[in-house]
Image (cartoon, rainbow, N blue to C red; front, side, top):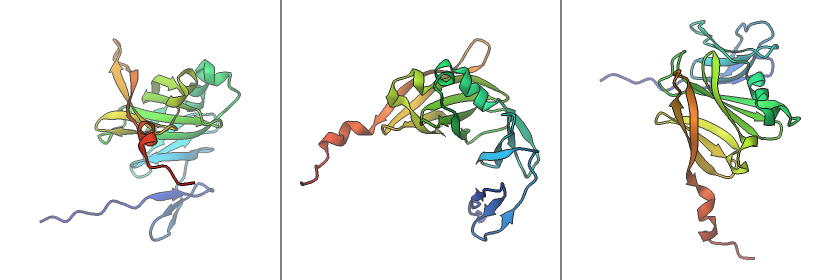
Length: 196
């Protein structure tokens, strides 16, 4: 019988841009494009953001590069974000398990008011986005992931949503609707209450 290798341990990004490998504690330094900062990772890909706002996916092992849109610019193109007075502060990139450099990716952007924008991209362009400022406040997402081929979002109110993604006539993916599939808050009143 063949032996399976355990999954690789994660690397942690250090403040100086180097990476810390677990469990041996080795510090790994990789040359990044001038002025670029690592803002996250997915599988073997690093999400890099340059000073001018350009975003790249870089595979440091194969040296492959995929251009992404300027995410801060995309965020500000939504009028409710642009007039808010806030700024993007966190970016989370997710892709399906069968991801390839040309597959659909989603980006969760949280601003410094904890309001979310979800973008779907087919690199190098954003094909659609959903801003929580324009929605009901219960649809402010703090996490997104792909599961069973569908994009899901977890709201701050412990509701799990699924994003239905369809394709328009030109073949670009669009978020057609979001549906709440789990509402954790609905069963809270049935839980035992603490004695006071």
